[in-house]
Image (cartoon, rainbow, N blue to C red; front, side, top):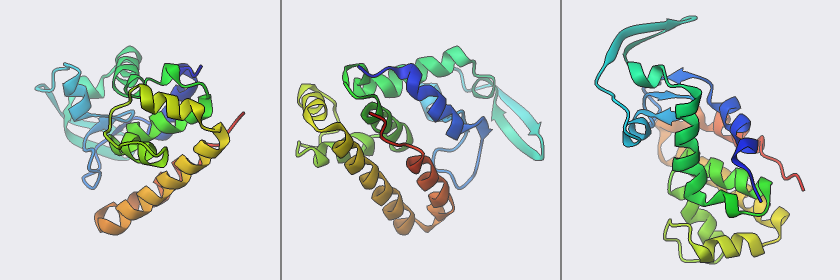
Amino acid sequence: MAEAKRLMPIILKWEGGYVNNPLDRGGETNKGITLAAWQAFGHNVSEKLVSVTEGKKTWCNVTKSLYEMTGEQWLEIFKNGYWNRWKADRIIDQSVANILVDWVWSSGIHGIKIPQKLLGLQADGTVGEKTLEAVNASEPSAIFAGIKEARLEFVKALSASNPSQACFLSGWKNRINDFNYIP
């Protein structure tokens, strides 16, 4: 069975630290945790820091609690908000679990609905028994390849339909291409 601890370093590699890019639809984030996700997990977002400078970057009105997020807080949100959303502890193949959870991490419900369509299921956005059975019954390298291709098509379409997001396309593709099937 897949293990969350094997995906965590991959996600953290691509997420880095605090970011507040005005073009990023996720808005203010730290290690990939958006302010909305942070708040949804019950964290206080009312206290702001006037500014924070790291290297050559300065951010104003930074949410203090998000900026100071601990590793334990990150892990709680990763596991409960993303890993468990795919019920990934029940996915047999680690590579398949990794690419599925990273997709829901990066793109929300699309990371469930599109794989469900690929599996020939009703795309309801909820991972239930039928979805898990279909994932685990699929030939792992084939379903992995299909998911990876669908993710690449998804980000290309997203960039094409929303030109403000085109600046992120290269990074999205690099991230997706960093996932390789390992038997």
